[in-house]
Image 1 (cartoon, rainbow, N blue to C red):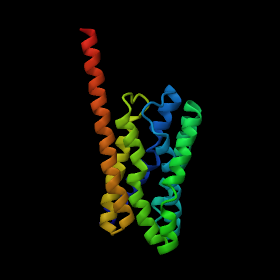
Image 2: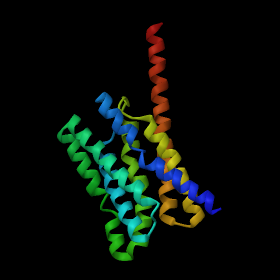
Image 3: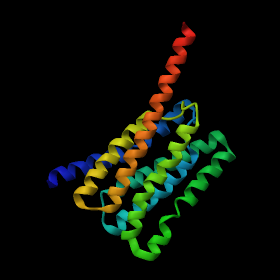
Image 4: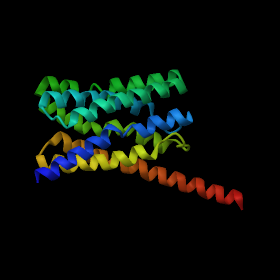
Length: 205
């Protein structure tokens, strides 16, 4: 059983550390940011910073590398978005980081890292919520990298399974909300792509 759990952690860590990479690469290569939420980048950077500190404080070492690398990637995405959309992007990034990134703080003060870690896990749904909202609001999703959300779905599923196995409420909360939000975005991408293809066929005819 320990071998299976260790394998799940290893896979989730590897996937999680590179989850944001396809999105960053797509923006760099195409210069397109349509459908990519600046607020998502901001809050993701803030919450990965929380995960990093939580992992170190509670000795959940499997969380540390994925959080550190993810933090770097989300900061990179945020910078790229701001460069492409200007002040509006800057405000959205800062707003997401401050508004949602500060949520665990009072729980840390009131109940310590165990409570704060659970709240950080629950905030994973909030972390992805701006991306879901933007994906359903925007008609053009040309900037969204499918690979990021496929990785997010698989990674969240692994952390959910691992969290259930070791009875870690923070990991269970984060994994469950991550699965739900990633699935919503992938479904939206599929709908938009199907619609675009149908329009192309109609025009060709």
